[in-house]
Each structure stands twice: as structure tokens, then as C-alpha cells.
Length: 308
Image (cartoon, rainbow, N blue to C red; front, top):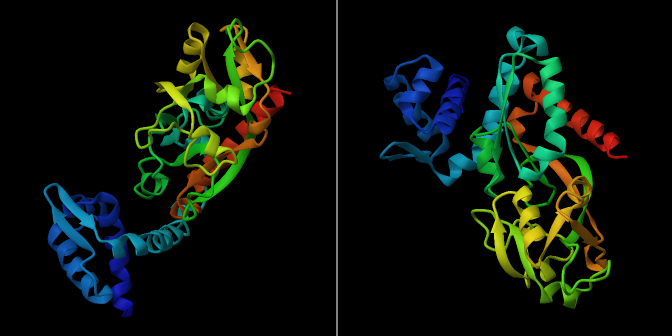
């Protein structure tokens, strides 16, 4: 690559993120013709088509997707060295942040984050979106959201992550369940009952399957009678039906009495579940993004202290 070709990299990144030549040109402040000419040169440099035209824009080739994280990170690292990005003042921030999260964290971690942001960055806004996919890489690479908060796994090696807190999964049923009279449950009794799970669009077996947890084989054998769209929907269903479900211990402690539930000690579900935030490597050095991650860490610490 010649020195003069390095100026093409921001064009490549803009097209990858906009998926449209016209939108990329507007973002860069150049003509669409200039973007098209840059693509011609980029194809020569990388010996790849890079982008394929579609009805509403362009789609990247597999090679373009492979090189995007490195090039996007380089562009952002250079941008954050400029004077206008050298500092971040939360009180002056009017940015809208977006976090994709499991519904359970709307009752634990996220209220603490809201309190911190309303105090430290009152002019900023936050949008929380439900997490309905396991394709976190695409979600974060295309900047559909700034962070994803969910259970920590080794399924996303190309993303950055940081563990925020830990919790334990507990088997729950209603207090007057006709068969589960004691305070413990074995594997056979667990699998003999009908189950309520948290659904996800790209998974039929419930949220926890496919995440590499120790007892996933047992979870795959469950007779699922009801798939709920949010964790809070599970509680009244368990209250009204002779079903069982897995529930984070922290959340159960808050709502056990309200819904007349009881926890069943299960030897096969002893391992804790770590909660993590995920982000794309291209955002690591963004001052506002770094500040947001710091607030998430602080919110997790505050919530953990409040439950002790």
C-alpha cells in the first residue's frame, strides 16, 4: 500500500458502517463519485471486491468483514488523538448511549447506572434495547449499540469484555406446588416437571442453552411449556402454574414474597454465573465510551453493596 492510499481507509470504514455509498459520502463530506473512485482503488489495493451492491446499498465481502475491526480501530485511535477528542466532560455530554441488555438487568444493574448518569451527565440520554440475538459481534461492530450486557461466555472471542458481577441460578416453583414439597430438587425431579424459560429469537431451547455452562446437557432435556419474553414475565407464570424455572438469586430475593415463590436447592446448578459487558475493540479508546464503561463498573459495585 502506498502512502497516498492510507487516506482511503476512512472511506472503507464509513462504507462498512453505513452500508451505503451515498450515506458514506455524506458522513465524510465528499461526493458520491469520490467514494466510488476510492472503492475502485481499495479493490486494487486489497485484491478483493470488498462490497457487493444490493437493492438498498452494499454488502461487505467476507474479506472486508475480516479486515474491518483492525482498520476501524486504527481510524478511531487516530481520531481520539485530536484535540477535540482529548478530553471528555460528562456535564457537557449530550450524547445518546445505547445498551442492549437482558431484561433481568433492568431490575438490578441498570437502575444504578441510571442514577449515576442522571447525576454525572444530566444532558446525556440512554436507550436500553432488549437482547434478542447471540450475534453480538455484528450488533457491536455496526454500532447498533454501544455495549451489550449479558452472561459472560467464551463465545465472543473477537469482542472486548469485562465482568461486572456474579450471580447464582436458582430453581423456583410456587410455594404450594403439589409435588415439590421440600427445599431441594434432584435432576430426575427437575426434568420430570414442565419448565418456563426465557426465549430468544435465534434459540429454541431458551436463553441459557448454547452458552457453555456446566449443566447445559441437563437444560437441553427440559420439557419447556412456556417461553417468556422477559424475566419478569416468568414470575407470575410460576405463581399461577405448576411449572419450574431458573431465576437469578438476586432477583428472586426481591420478588419471592410478592409472587409466593420458593427456591429449591439444586446440587446440579451450583456454579455461579458471571455478568459481563461486551464492546467492540474499535470503541476501546473512545473517551465517552470509556466513561460509560466506568459507570457500568461503578453501578455494579453499588448494586452489589446494596444487596449485602
